[in-house]
Image (tube, rainbow, N blue to C red):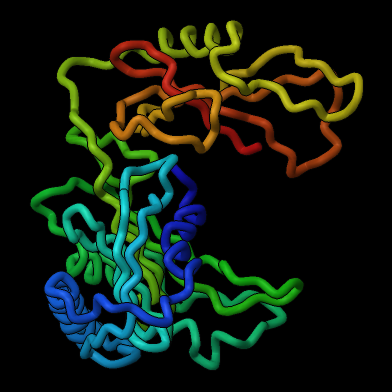
Length: 329
């Protein structure tokens, strides 16, 4: 499963493209339907802010000023999303992103929170949260109920982190809470990609929400292969170069002595069509796999403390097929 801070990418990705200057689809029936959904969400967000004594920023009425349909997938190597359609109000006050195939909401952003005066100040030292971890999770859970239908998805226990994701070295901007729930199967195995993440600045309405719960997956019956068997399969894949990972040289003359096993976890992954093309097109169907992590053993000493060439091999938990690989480099 991704580190929590990496999930920020799925929230901020909606900000990567500017709103179209003109769009003739604002009066279409589909835009009216999606606008009504957005209006209902804003009403619930405002009421929840009132209940929690948080400040709701912006208007509670949604009037789309632009529509942006796109054929590009979001975060394709990790999850299946497909083409999207974004509706936004003037000045990015409220932006909503839906999947085109089923009009399912996958993202919300409040651009006015980011534009608050206090968020434009770079401080000498990172600020510390006023909320406790449990308080942040409780508040995040109240907002999650607005965006997630519990009848059609299973989520694991939440994790939360107070993160400083905007920097102006050596100074930093105000931190924000990231509260995230991984999608899981009936046995609690987490998805590598699918998740719900809410981004909250203390005292305010959420400034970003990502709802990625759409990757196709059919849970199999029976017991997965044993960890020991999966490790042997992973080592054989390295030996026969089925995966293009395994060694990043420190310097000239460095050689690979071996690969040290570090850990193995059962995780639901989205296999690429070509396991040697990192970040390439996916198969579109997730599988339960043993994600087996190895750390290469070098003949030379590492002189760079932040250097990490550990990597994982994905072994299908039922068929033993090599599905893919992942690494820090």
